[in-house]
Amino acid sequence: MRNRLTFTRFFLPTVWVSVALAQMPSFSEREPRYHLQPSDVLELHYRYSPEFDQTVTVQPDGFVGLTLIGDLHIQGLTLDEAKAAILEKASERLKDPEVTVVLKEFEKPYFTVTGEVGTPGRYEMRGPVSPLQAIAMAGGFKSLSAKNTQVILFRRVGPDLAKTQILDLDVASSKHSGEPLSDLRPGDMLVVPQNKISKIERYVKMANVGAYIPIYH
Image (cartoon, rainbow, N blue to C red):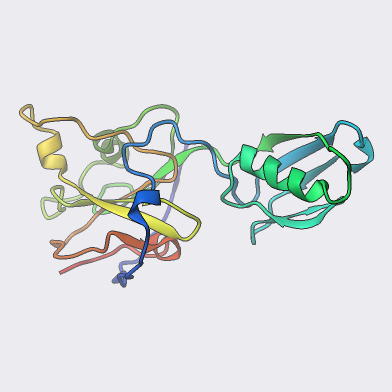
């Protein structure tokens, strides 16, 4: 099932970001672990202290309120990383605690297609989806003016950053194309611009990605 979204065209201001590129995930990463998000629901079970067992929801600010250790920020962590953070804090109150953390509810994987396509919106990811398939699911290119040679892929690489890549889907759809484009990952956003892109920063603030359709001249 897909939920249609309405977008307004604005210019997306580019952001200069200093990053250690060696530490940033690449577009070729496969099978990434799920990262916790607001509204996810976790169950905590303490093996030797069941009185502290509880079910918690990740709040919009990324924190959970834990009976034993208080507020803890876990947004953006994998389940294993969240468990390690909980154990570290619990160790201040308990001797050699053992805790099981179960992800009970989470946001289903999805991708977003916006810009010059027939039906822009968010689409549930039920299996491998290539950029070409994603565009087709979104109703195809809206007009001949759509820049299918400069489709922008935004991919989250941290809580506040998205990495950008320009995809030439015209070449990708050709029988003479080289290596096929990698499949999308959950949370990816494809933007089909109307105007030619002259410049785009390699990294942009994540907060800006979902709010605007970038139009470059």
